[in-house]
Amino acid sequence: MKTIIFSNIVGDVFANKKVSFLPKMKEIIKSWNLKDFNLVYVEATMKGYDDEIVFKNIIKCFDDVGLSFNQVVRLGLETEKVKILKKNVLYFLTGGDPLEQKKIIEKFGLESVLKKTEYAIGFCAGGINLSKYGIITSDEDFAEPLTYKAVERVDFSIEPHFNYEEQQKNSPVTYKKRMKELKSFIKKLNEPIVAIPDKSCIYVDDNETTYFGEIKILK
Image (tube, rainbow, N blue to C red):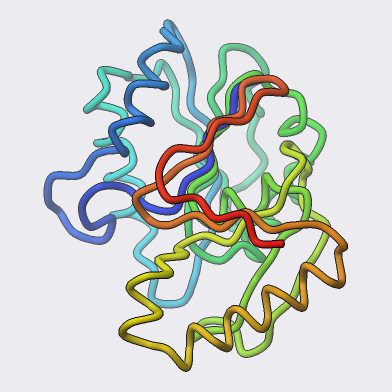
């Protein structure tokens, strides 16, 4: 099984401008050499989050690596019953609210599918839900920190958007609160958390995990 987990694209995912996947992600996706494939795109609707522009920009990112799909299925809480594609499928779990996305995963019974499908990519919230445990620190979107059992496609748990140098410098109070919450999670779960800055990504190819960029293993 091949899995990419990352925090952000290159460019503004909310703007109608040029966007792309991270350079190392592009290299990996091209190496997959996907032919006659379909895309299952799992939403993660969040208040103030423009699902449509995010979806269009992710498609632009795939276009940028020369990958087009025979069929694209978008799954959201408002999506009616659809036939879930089983063969030649790339699952893309987008960013947004991981709890809303978890509801969609449960609605369409994707837990077991996401554990064994050959190709999957998790973007921020999507990466949280592909993890062993979902880790959510408090911020403007979540009043309290929380954790939950996630899909467990990979055997670790992540904290996305961990731009630690920038946050330490510009928002030291927020950074200290975030680190306190993460340390509490580590103690509670009795295992480390993999923190991913926006310009970094993780690639899991079967049982081999490779970190690209300034990944931090918090213990």
